[in-house]
Image (cartoon, rainbow, N blue to C red):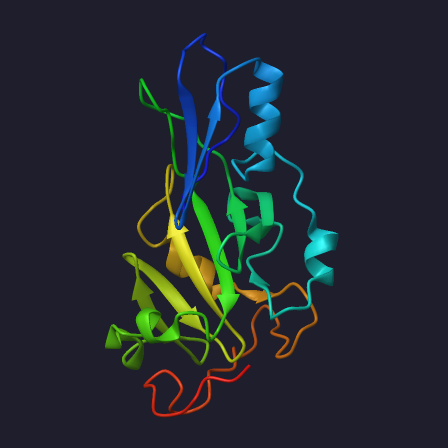
Length: 205
């Protein structure tokens, strides 16, 4: 999942790309105003995150790291990501590259229903050996993914971040909406029912 902050118009022909893990967006470089507006709506940072709309989201539990995590402000919330997941973008970055400039923001949290592609996401058994606040933590796309009772949260790090940022963000997770189970900032994160991650029990949310 990748994203970027609004680009500056350098008079370049072609396309400017804003890519997110699991998503790639492209827009023609026209006027600066049009580019900034399109990138902001695409989740590239610099937009006003609609926290109130996210609080009303009721499809599944939304876990986030607050409106600011460490030095990174929440810059975008994408409630309409393809593939039935919600993305929280923290911080911004400067696009690089000559033909198709792109970059990855410092931190992104991708939240999806627990059962979404669970057989593939939980395939690496590392979740059996590590956990955060009671919830098992696996890995997918070289990024940690936390499995809670109602949702899975993937944490991606990017420009301007250190290697442990994604893990620290998972430690700081708390509920944004009111869909059960509701998780406090420091309380236990309820784990999936026994057997669900192993595949010996159906995943039902």
